[in-house]
Length: 461
Image 1 (cartoon, one colour):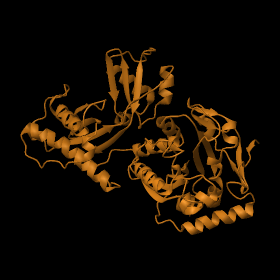
Image 2 (spheres, rainbow, N blue to C red):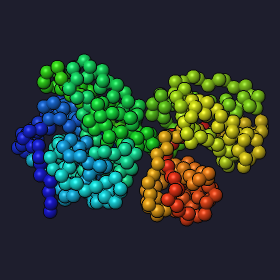
Image 3 (cartoon, rainbow, N blue to C red):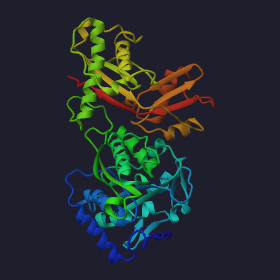
Image 4 (cartoon, helix red, strand yellow):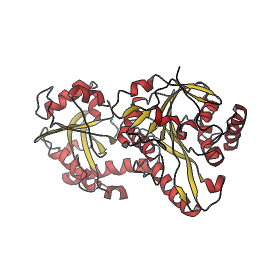
């Protein structure tokens, strides 16, 4: 059996099992008991020497108390510090070793190697500390578990998110992202910089830079998929080395977060579903009010004007779908964010109601019975595929919306279409037909992009 031996035992953390176990337990004890009974789906933790970041990391691992034997797989991602890597690197070994024992590699790791952005690179793991320093905390809190370890190099948030999607699993799987924050700034400047980063993480904004977090690439991948699945981030601790050990002239920032799955993960939010945050609830109400108000205005029906909100002024792309007695009554949208989101929703709501060529214009007597859904699109990302079979293998059912272009022909399916076409072959075949192309058509000039949506729907009667 091939083993990746401990590389930073005795430097980043104690080299003896007794001393290591004592230090980990001390950090966990000082962190205190978790204030929530909900199991986190993912955590972000720092990866410096334990004297510096151990207290902050422990605040995240304390949320795992009581989960020993329940979490059986840990997907662990950290940035490459020593070796340049294109994509995400697996170690190509059977186990990782620490002074507390060995951790076996989960079979899911081998399956990830079939993804184009995943490589096997033992050298990237040999001396990398960002993953190793997490293992003693995981061993102490979880006991026995299997590991999917990935060193992350040059990759996009979507490439990281695709890997996370492939091993997302259920409550038996925990995602751990290893990252420090700002590096070598004066104490007060670091505090201000890290607070901005903390707000971005709370907002699930997957645009962090490496000056904000050395693990920005895996963090952005987590934030990207967290947006799709409506996870909620909770800040557990935010400090720097000037607070834990060392002087305050040049400090390194550390933060810990837990991410929790909310009801109806990855599905449209309706009015009867508890919405995690006031901000999300406000966005839900505002978008639907904007759409309904646009239709009412066209019909000459007086309604209360929707509340103003800053997010409506940012450019965004949306689809508005109407249903009458649970049957489709209109659906029109934008694929490109070419105007403020509020204007885009208004335009598409009126178009769905009165200009969808498949339906007669909405009548005044239908207004009260029609139910509205607003879908806000992420920026479409081009996909690279060698064949139609390759493209099918890359698709993520119930996550990907797809845009297909060939010459002047263009068509799209929202992720909701997976509900009626759950098979990737059928999904693509119907999309090709919609674009006016033969089923099974393939050409090197075929252009495919994918996107995700955040959907907000009125409740059906």
